[in-house]
Length: 118
Image 1 (cartoon, rainbow, N blue to C red):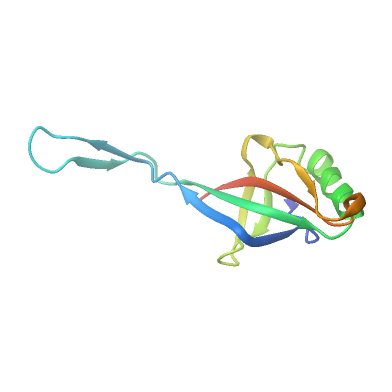
Image 2 (image 1 turned 180 degrees about the vertical axis):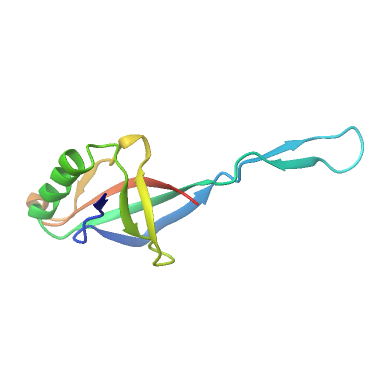
């Protein structure tokens, strides 16, 4: 399994983490609504911005995306909040748009969504 590239830095600014609790809720005629678990695991989504410190890093990331994980593959990475190793993928295979932060993409960023099972 591929490892997430170390040169792609995940920024804390704009980082969010969310999940669907996989709970079914049924309203009752009287009393408190009933709830039950639908799945034993939940799909966690990480909204993140990646920072690339050189144009070569941008090219290397795209090569990794197309060749190593083939756009939809799973990869291992350290969770930005916990530091634990997780197995993740890009939501819908999308890596978002590349935005230049300096002329000629010497510094650039990408906002994207990664997902993993918890």
